[in-house]
Image 1: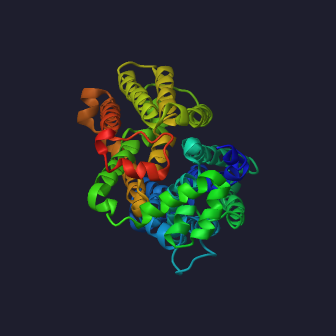
Image 2: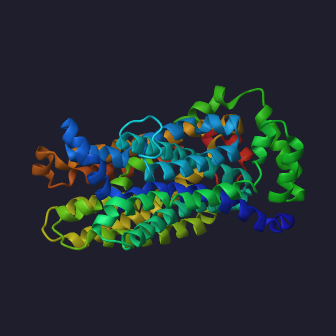
Amino acid sequence: MKKGNDNMPYIYRLTLVAALGGFLFGYDTAVVSGAVNAIEDYFSVPMSVRTGIPVEAVTGFVVSCALIGCIIGGSVAGFLSIWLGRKKGLLLAGLLFFFSGFGAAFPEKMNLFGTEPIYSFVFYRIFGGIGIGLASMLSPMYIAEIAPASIRGRLVSWNQFAIVLGILVVYFVNWFIARQGDVQWNMTTGWRLMFLSSVIPSVVFLILLFFIPETPRFLVLKNNRKKALNLLRKTVGEQEAESSMKEITETLTAKSAPWLSFGGLVIMISILLAAFQQLTGINVVLYYAPKIFQNTGTKLDISLLQTILVGTVNLVFTIIAITTVDRLGRKPLLIIGGSLMGLAMAAIGFTFYSENMGLLALIFILVFIAGFAMSWGPVMWVVLSEIFPNSIRGAMSIATATVWITDLIISWSFPVLDENGWLTGRFHHGFAYWLYAIICLAAVIFVWRMVPETKGKSLEQIDKLWKKPSSF
């Protein structure tokens, strides 16, 4: 595809703009980490005094309430991708990020309902969560639909890299803001600037979105075939544009809808992929790493260690996924990474049987993060962005919502398992980690037996795979 190679700079530009949605996903998810103490002081303590609800319970809800929005956004993203389109859906996500940043920073001034500031703050955080849910589906979907088959895995993986980068950047932004004043300044002003900082990348994202086109699949869906063909000439090249156009048209106008034959299988596989990504315990490691170290007896500066080491390993191994996903394939990476994650989780469980095992726990946590970053982090989203037939691509929202629902379940259930006296007495805090290790093994077996290899195939060729599931 010599002609197509000439179009690579254009494809990369489109990918980078769409991946900014992933950057905002990571940024908005992690920005709250720098404001936890201020949230507790400004919102949780007054609410606890008025209602009698424990301060920890109020803080936990306020900090994690964006997940509610993520579930909502993920659930409606499929409908919006068909009704508004992939590009306009991303524009909506950008607007939600923009207003969430202002609203969370000034919940008193942007109080739409005349309620107490805590309710206004939660409203805007849920607002931002809806943007996260939309971007988590639409960014990889957009990239998959404009990318040539030979490099689609690499380009979709850029979105995961952007998420990880967004998390790291906001850690440094929060650190920089916190250093501008004393503790009292941060309790009154610093936390507001942290949330307000998300407005800057939101504006950049919104501006750049006006300079990218809709995807060819959506244009064909809306009978704008001339525009779709012109765009295909810019992405897959002059020689392949006509054949790609024919394949897209055929899959969108086929009389025998995949939903009636193998659509149910596609959705079942996508739901299990999404659930396994979270049930393997990734967010337990990210959210509760300090507690893991505390339980193993360490006295290290956990927050700094976690930010630097986990963030660095996450970035490095995401890059490894980007460079190998189109050469090794999706299934090998998911199987290798899942196996590594399972072994690391099992090993973490054993570190609780001896005192002063903090260093070993750190090593196994980093091994787990490496396994996730090279496989289930980016590659799961690659597979989800590819496996849905054109006629039901909006159903990807079911899998996206599953990611956020299982994230919520795993985040809330871990403290229950880890602090249960009966389990702790018998398993020394290791039970939850061994449970996640077993889930990792189940995920590996599931991928091996049920997930098709999509490397090097066009989206329309993947569509045809579902008519012959025995070829997986």
